[in-house]
Length: 439
Ligand code: CMC
Image 1: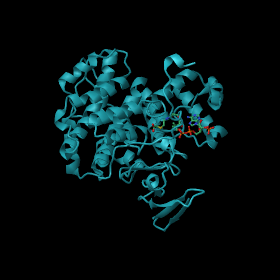
Image 2 (image 1 turned 90 degrees about the horizontal axis):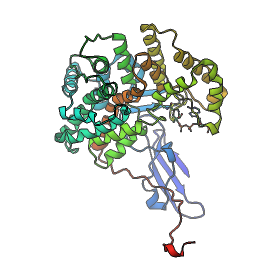
Image 3 (image 1 turned 180 degrees about the horizontal axis):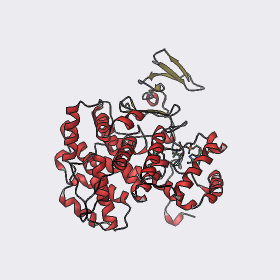
Image 4 (image 1 turned 180 degrees about the vertical axis):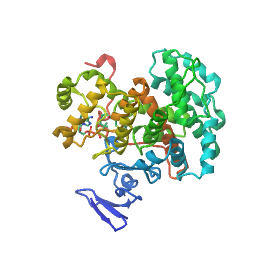
């Protein structure tokens, strides 16, 4: 394979099949930032070969203008804006607007958007009955998959994916209603009455209200905690073509309705290698139990046969540091100080794990650093949010990212159904053998 690129990154790659005189020249594409990308679309037609990239570590599946990550430099940009600036100076609703529409809003646009989202926060009353069908001990992520998917049965008026206005209303509904569904999944599990959304509160405040308030008592907002919640939402709002976003896009490429697509994303997020990691971090800390058990745990992590991972560490793309983790770490200390938490054994274990992992050759050589979920789990625990809700919270935050990526996919004229190929290693064609003559 030979490549030629000019200073602008444009150029070609020529692929020659060894031992033949067959070759093809493929275009080299370049984005605003990031490495050049070989456009292999005509490779199979020209040479009759596929590419192989399990886990898609070297494959760009789409063009996108939404989020950019430089894993080596620890950079995360939403529509070009650094995550540090957005976490410090913006809020979730403004970030949601930015992700959906590509630009920061004017004051009027922001107000209209805020109104548009809050207008849709209530659920169809009939949807409320869905919750009764679940066992009280159901994992809230199971409830989320079910109820978000079921939204397609309730909002028929915005299922035409080819109508831009219907797409927008579906997006508003998803962003607005997902916190209500999440909070009700939690209330159901603890047997408390559902709290209806309050549109006088901010997105983060309303979510905390629906999670924590009860009808019997007034609810008091703690600005430090709602700010921390808002920051968690901002930091998790989008993350380029990760597993759940790619799932949403793959489902969307079939023409499935947006509610079905987001339910598919929620299912993919649930796994412990992805959004389930924040819950897994807390489980791991509880299993370790005491700081003196850490060395044995770390030895287990290094032993390939134990299949134990240090949860909250490592990332497919970030190989230097996760910029979200840096911000989360600061927020974590703010929240713990506000709540007056000094002697939290799980926190001591977490800090000791972090110290060991950052100085241990095994983790250093593999470029394994704490990721966003390492600290978000600790913050949420300190805020009294039950462990099972951690991944749900991630799903609430990521809904706007999924919705924006889904909209971008549908609006991309080059989009086709997603359909990867494979290396088939099963038996070659053979004839059926009747039962009575099989050995
Ligand atoms: N603990 C111990 N070893 C690890 C870990 C870990 N957390 N992560 C990776 N490794 C090792 C892995 O065994 C491999 O070692 P070797 O080269 O000796 O075979 C090496 O590091 C490279 O790992 P990999 O499996 O090729 O990395 P990946 O890019 O496929 O996986 C990951 C990325 C995030 C799935 C993985 O690091 C992991 O499972 N981490 C723990 C779960 C976690 O915290 N996930 C949240 C990610 S951030 C939130 C989100 O975006 O969803």
